[in-house]
Amino acid sequence: MNVSVALKWVDVGAAVDIPYQGARRVDTDLGAIAVFRTVDNEYYAVMDKCPHKGGPLSEGIVHGRHIACPLHNWSFSLENGEAVGADAGKGCTPTVPLKIEDDRILLGLR
Image 1 (cartoon, rainbow, N blue to C red):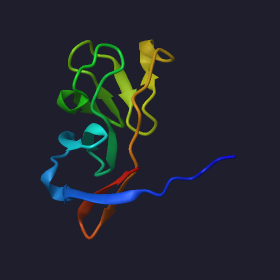
Image 2: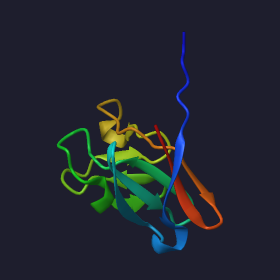
Image 3: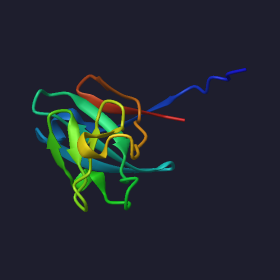
Image 4: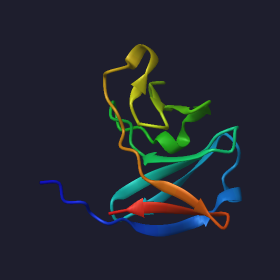
C-alpha cells in the first residue's frame, strides 16, 4: 500500500534573486538543495550533491535543462535528476518539488 506523505511548502526566497543560468544553495533539514533558473526562466530543484563524487551541483554550469557537476563534469537532467550524455545510466540526484507563487520560490519538503 502506498502511503502518500503531504508536502510542506517552504518559501526559500524571491525567484528573481536567482540569475538566469544560475543557482542558489538552500540548507534544509533534508540536506542542501540546489535551486536553478534556466535561460528560459524555468526553475528546478535537486539535492545539491553529485552521486559520483559528492560535488556541489549548485556550483556547476547550467546548460539548457541540465547541470554539469563542477568536479568531474557529469551532467544531470534538472527535470528528473538522471545522468545524461556519456554518463547516462550511471546515477541520479533526487529532484525536489518546486513551485513559484507570487514571485516566491516554494520547495515541497517532506
